[in-house]
Length: 254
Image 1: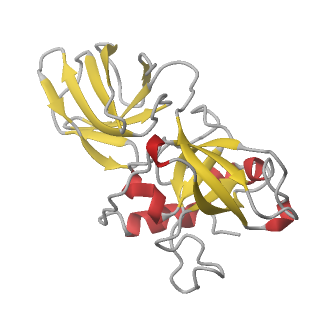
Image 2: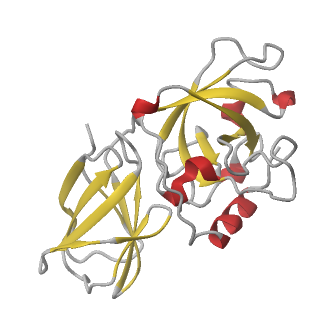
């Protein structure tokens, strides 16, 4: 089994400058990988993580989550993507016919001190899912530890609209984008204040998007583009007079 959530996050920060280019899409079909689990029976150890989502319960992700290996994580651009996973080729440990759908919420760091087939499960170039324990137990027996799986990208089905949490301070607006349906993984964001034109935002880490403009007091609109190229415009989703730390809900991809 894998390291704790805190080690996931610290290891992510240490390689944040590295870019991995491949993004897995719907056209890739079913592919092979392996899966382990972490976070305890109630998945409390999965909170936080390298995507920046914080409390996965309050954000609506619950326990159906996964930390992705380097080969899948795409330097954080895969955060929010959804995957269908089923245990295969191991009748002793797999639960027959079961499949799960999980959202990518964390990074599973490589362990170069261990070989890929004996503890270094998340080492490149391996495709690996470190699942929350409750969701792992829906497809395999707890005592298996690690199982072979087959996976594919699937659309994310989320309740309610896309959420925008405004953090940071003046001239450093850090917007966490969560609960994204459709492709799920956001690849570009623009912001428009009531006194400005559209401005591109830069991705700071995970799904935290940054603007260095002075936007205090203005109503804010966002254009959000997912990995499938679809863009949604959330007009005046943040009301004038907002404060840092607040969360606002916009429309959703359909």
